Length: 154
Image (cartoon, rainbow, N blue to C red; front, side, top):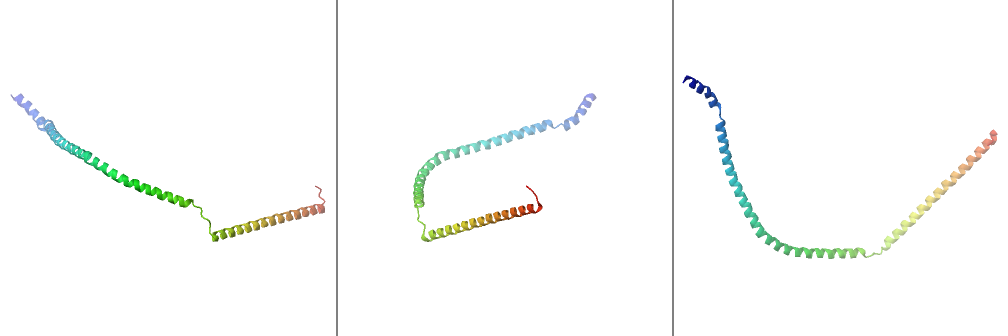
């Protein structure tokens, strides 16, 4: 009996500190409650979504078709009006306009100034070419005189 009592006394700390059975039971109870509550709310939400989709399917489809038919005819007339306006604008743009007298006179004056500028520019180029040729001739004469004075033969 004392040995049995000793064995039981030996198991007491183990029994006091071992909470696994209690904790496992609490976890299972919590999970069961959570799953039941969650499943109920999810099923309820699924039914709500199904009802909403059904009502949208029947109510909105008819409404969309009716509004589409009505608005598409309005849109077609608006697009046709816009196209006719664009065609009229293109026809106006294609009409050749004769320039005014002032514009023609200004063009002639610009062309005349351009011709004078080009003429003056060519005259200036010609003067530069002439002066270079004169300098080349002068330098050639100076070298030939220098060669004669120094008696250098080519």
